[in-house]
Image (tube, rainbow, N blue to C red):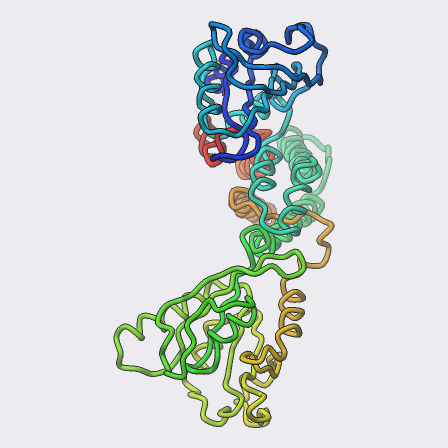
Length: 466
């Protein structure tokens, strides 16, 4: 990572607040010359220059052009190395949120020796300077983009260091296993036994079980982070679009008595109890010769395959007339995904639930009248229940795709080690796989990173001022 460390010789600047006009804007300056550069522009009301200030000091003053003309009144805040976010001398300037003022202030900073920061460069410097590990740096981006209370809680847990500590402890356990394997190899010709094969198999298997358990949390963790995908599916004219509108509390989808009105997916989001749900209204599933409608139906099945929860909407008046072939196809497509069976239009007639096909009778069902809003609150509570994190949510929940892939790689390598131990393969042939497993685990916290390219990919997705 030597090439990355060279960026710390520069002093960088960027706007840290969202783009556009506002009441205030904050510009961040970080690097070895941060204090001296801002000193050339900023005049405090007390007359002291920044280099005379103690750390963690804020002061009111003005930023001036070279000729002495005032650009704007600002509040400067000083953070001294190494006790700043980046680990470097850092100054933040809070100015008025005029786009012109922001642009001019950036021009002045760059003209006095700053460089515009790259996306995520402040967080990258925090990582390179040991202020954050890699998963904590990624959590900063997750905190900024969190769209629900539960997503924020997951990001906060990753940011506090306990997340990385759990993975580093797992890697340390694997390192101990590596040492036992190497000792077995070193003393293979002597009558010395540090751990028999059954003990090594047990240790590897328990570690593999823990990795596989973490892998299973990704589905729920990613759903919380990105929003729980809910597919609203069912036959044409069952009231799916009316249900979407009822859940949202506004008219989002076109509603008509004409079957096949919805030809494409209609998406919107809804927060319930601090959880973000991504609702997807789909085309009615039925046999049709209409080519465009057929495309819409295929997209309905695509939505089913990507959903975390499926709402299967039926017109409660016509349960005996269901197309069994399409019903079976939908059930097969749902697989293990939770399905809520919604018997709609119950205000017009009491659904004859005894007429439900056998394959639907085991599904949890709710009778509702979406057009009148009846049963909607009960449905929201059921959605909330289905979207809860798995048991032990106080434990580590994986929501990051990079971490998930690293765990998959680690599990694959460790399975080979377990199989090799069971087959009696020599330790020297097992060590590379065990080392690969450790490397994958350590990549999560950044204790081991294979190349600068990995870091560039991670931080390039951050906003400029972070």
